[in-house]
Length: 609
Image (cartoon, rainbow, N blue to C red; front, top):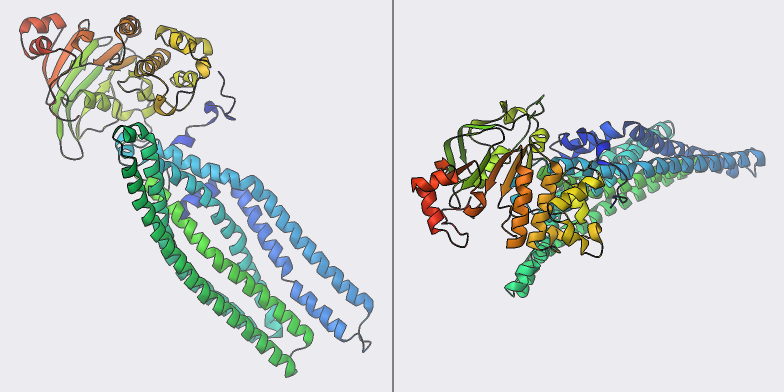
């Protein structure tokens, strides 16, 4: 099993690819990417766009000379050679301008896809650093679509900034230089109208951006709704709610349709106003120039130059005004993605955080206070010491704080007060990666990627050899059921491992724990989905895995914890009893009562954890 589809090895991507901060605004985000990744290419592209239109700015003067020469040909004041010389220069200008445009396109060919890649990488990397609560509050499908749209929006924004905007600035400067000696009033009128027209277009486009932003949000919601229903298709079928899901989607599509109609009506109105203004001004310029010719103030060649330069400026201004709509539309899409993703990280590292060095695996929890965001208190002054290599079992009713404690140990939640130390090192002073590297976990509901079984096991330690993957699979008793699959380790497990049974998914999670070989092991109902025969085999393998490691195991089936060094009975965020299984049984307390009452593995429920 090889990852031949990947062109880059994970080790080639440095830490900055995963931890670079994301600016708060769309424009700052775009300029950050251009400045850090492609500064030279941006300069080259802007230069080529400017040079192309700069060369074309000489066209009106050449046309002026050519027309004047043709008009004087019958009078013998010019020669055929002079005419053809002007014609050759005109052709040379066109070829030179075209060459600059082709060079711009070549540089853009190798730049634009990388800009899209860089934008998506930045946002995706930052997104992965958010806390679990962030992902609970946002549709996964919506987040993915926003990042994809953001990458696509960077390309038209780049084109408008480096091509259209640069061209209009250059041609306005050229127009004033060319027109001023011939007709100063025309130079002032063209420059003034261009500025007013672009400012007006910008105001229209800004309103368009607001409507576009609303449409983009509705489109993302539609995508999120569809993905949510598809991901839970079995639930939809179980409750026969196909019509209900269509009704929900239909309402969302109606909102998207109305947002689209508002945007399109505004575009029709705006384009009508701007087009009328452009045609009216252009005709006015032509009429004024014709009047000057008839009055004898301008030659026919002068008229051709004025007409050509004015047309060149007006056409470029009109093009930029139309692209302003596109600019603000994509700026809104990019801004929405940046705003959604670039929220302040709930859990982050301090500057110059050290790497966690685990030698024995001792865990100390001191005066820990934690409440959920909705105000529900979990811990009020929890203290706990887990000695190096000690095997701890956590039991108690649902809502006692067992799973919350495990999340706090790995900084998936942040406490309001208190501290946690691992081998004497404050976990809030170390890097998050080194903290996560210290733990291996076998959860109750293993998360699996829509990839092959081999890739899912290898995910625990991507630099591991294939021999190590096979060894981990054999120890966890995955190798048996994998061998029965037609594609073996290359079998695709489906979304969230839908093509595997509950027991098979849990064995894959156990194989990952074997492969990661971390000093601290967390078992959260690690054998809850296994049959009796497989559970016996896995228990034996887990005890082998737990050797020389600190272990914290959560289980509702108390029989799986009887051999632990110490068992903690928790209730309402407090440790009510602790000791070995035999010690707690002899005390005849809460644990003993639970042991006596338990049948079928169910515990009394207090509240959601």
